[in-house]
Picture 1 (cartoon, rainbow, N blue to C red):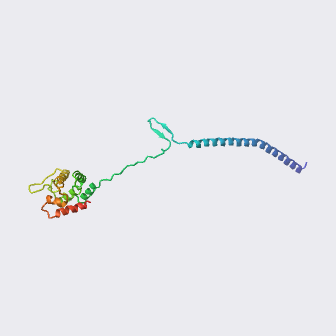
Picture 2 (picture 1 turned 90 degrees about the vertical axis):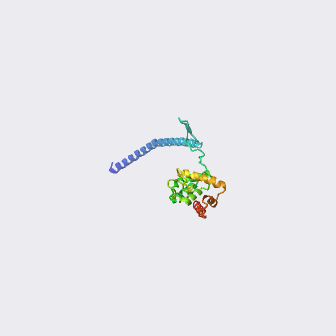
Picture 3 (picture 1 turned 180 degrees about the vertical axis):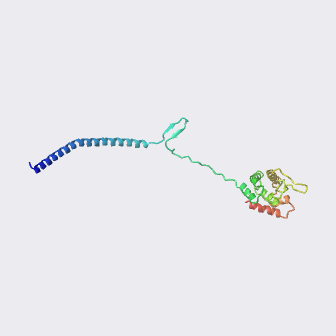
Length: 218
């Protein structure tokens, strides 16, 4: 047998065994592939079933609660309605600040008593600006008064002596009460009318000054 015949025989033998191996591989691998496919289909079907059940459950209200030891309830979802905070906002009384700022601008020792001035005005039904305006006219807002008197309004000051008060707050309420009882209740309501009794010798400048200072407090 020559070389060519031997080579042909080897090639024929190789081709035969190659085909045999391919046939064996086909019959071995094909069932495995089929089994794998069937298993995958069943797995997908089970997963789809679980997903469907989850979706179904999620369509129900998520108001899951449990009781804790303190007796409070904890919710897994937000409440259907969110509580709102409501209320009326009152307008703050600006008068004490108006008086305080005015006294501050003039560096008056009455500045810490702005709220007392307004409170006394309310108590005795006075214009809240009146007491400050009279103090401005009489003593330049307590800068020119008898030492230690706390009397910024010329109240009870006459040739026989000067009326003293223990504090500015006492003076504020005493003078306010006096204006109510001795002036407003007797018909003296305007600065001109008050001037006629408060300082009868004035040529009108007292009333003019009080009116001017009251207008500055508006």
